[in-house]
Length: 140
Length: 110
Image 1: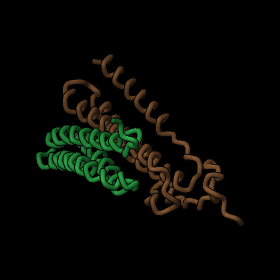
Image 2 (image 1 turned 180 degrees about the vertical axis):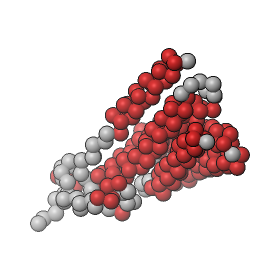
Image 3 (image 1 turned 60 degrees about the vertical axis):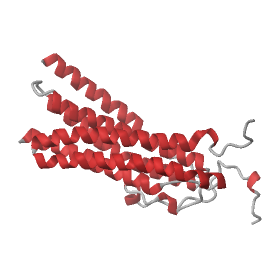
């Protein structure tokens, strides 16, 4: 098979079928820099900035939960608000690295980026927390 | 006289360095609150929050130093990626937010 010149290659076509990810690897991805080729560094840095934005979101939720627990001492039900925010913070932090690793792996193997449910789950989680906060405000 | 080439097209590296710095600052803020809340449960647990603050400060310093060191490799056209730093901040954020969650649940049950 004659090698295709770089300018003829369609960047959207995968070079080869990606190696199937073992089920454990989908939850705990390996270092993605061990597979594939270096993508354009702009995409790698954009992926990195997205990951850092998710980490900042998790840290902000954690700060909000800790603040709720510390400041709202006489408010009935404040533990639910604080613990709820901290749980969402933990889940976001735990998912963010996996997102980064799967995206990096897909970019290196020239496959489509895997879909992410993280924004939807974040929206649902924060909406629930807002409802809980409204309930607490109404009950006090 | 304007330069012909820019070694940091679209300011990608500077924006990434700023994202790292914003994350480090958020980590320090969260660590301060964790120290306060964990200290209410038991004074020795405040060390958890202090460690998070220190790690955030170290990350802030690392980012600044690393961006300075990047100028030479960037002019040579090398690709600056840091998977180790990503793993580091990913793991530490999971550990500290998990610790905050556990401490909150424990202090509620106590």
